[in-house]
Amino acid sequence: MASSSCLWLLALAFLLGSCTSLALGDLDPPAPLPLVIWHGMGVFGLPRCPGESSHICDFIRKTLNAGAYNKAIQERLVQAEYWHDPIKEDIYRNHSIFLADINQERGVNESYKKNLMALKKFVMVKFLNDSIVDPVDSEWFGFYRSGQAKETIPLQESTLYTQDRLGLKAMDKAGQLVFLALEGDHLQLSEEWFYAHIIPFLE
Image 1 (cartoon, one colour):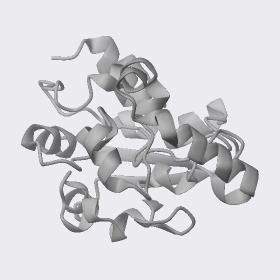
Image 2: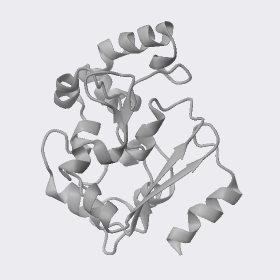
Image 3: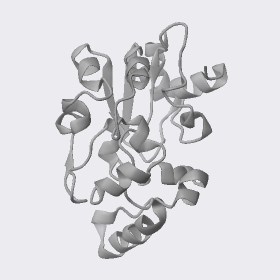
Image 4: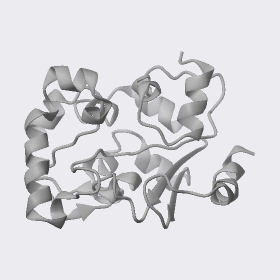
């Protein structure tokens, strides 16, 4: 079982880091957590330089992509664990040590699904002017349509949802998914917004 500090980090913070590596497989709380907030489908772009915005950014993205699935890089660089190449999905699924696993893209781990579905609410926050996460739609579990890196599709059109590999479709129908959006860059939210929109889920 994950430590209580990590449970609260998962429940209360917008973090990429060591606690997320505990993920869903190690969570077995005695009672349902009130909510979890996280980034969903990964990233495919350099912060403040989204690949679809210019040829230079696209070139940088492709250069980064060349080493993102190196085993040593995957094991040592947290950001690499969230790298999702929509053009070479097979390489992503085979070599991503974290994201492809927790998003059930290599197979279905029933404990992941069970633990996620035990949440009272799964809150996803999209920062509409986010310059770090590319594509921004991944904050609502959307992502690029497979095979290209320009057009995005929402969660509801993804295989993850239609096959309900993680339980998100069932949670959506049960009203457990919450999609929030606010103006601002990456994680730029006011204390007032946090208290108005997040704290009520914890009461």
